[in-house]
Length: 321
Image (cartoon, rainbow, N blue to C red):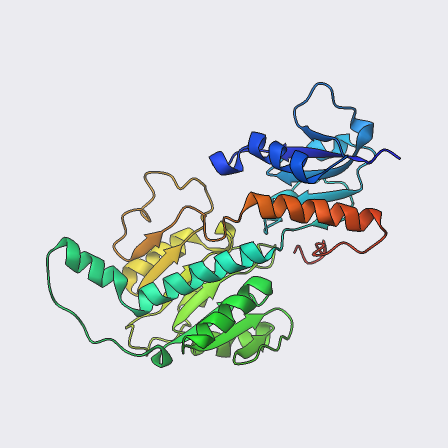
């Protein structure tokens, strides 16, 4: 029996994430299955049973009447969910160990950067100033992670292992060994009040859009050796109210921030975040995972689905993640 074909709808990306390289990867791992990179004039829409997508044009997926599963080639599905014409089919997000490990690396790197006063030390280097400050232990710092899914849980465990006091907040109750877990609206306030470095790994939904605003940031603990709270956002750009975030950096509500995601990407050259002395900007590469691992993951999921097994990491459309 002929296997249902896979359509690739991929826009943008670096050389490693280029549509042509994705096509070669999927050809390698989808033995015996036709793979089409759109646009392709030879494609028969009725042949397409699966779609692997990254920022597809709105409405494009509605053209495939026999589509069975949609695979998003990244962890966040908010852009895809914004398409009103998105077929009502299983939607699967990427959740591979490679992605989880890279996000944990990023979170640990930037928690350590702020904890070990790297912004001050790099400024001292540029000014040829030998003036070390007192360095406190990791146990003096409370790191709070908003979002205790697979990514947040792994990062929390790694930070706990380094000696930080780690807490986490999630929509529903979680239990992570060594981590003080908070959940729900009623427990957000106590979570924030004891957090020195806030790490945001939430999905972007209608409920979480612009959650990182002045009201939330002003409730973080200001009593740590850092002098003022720090924000690390490696979730989605829409989580942060950028005007209020900038105001918090300028008035001292926040002491510093690491930002990997922005509402407009690439970040415009005139954005004040580029040159702010207390901001570390990275180009949405916190968990820029290996496309080889992702293509194998999608191919395995298709095989599972065709064998009658449940899809893994399917999105709950009601929650948006």
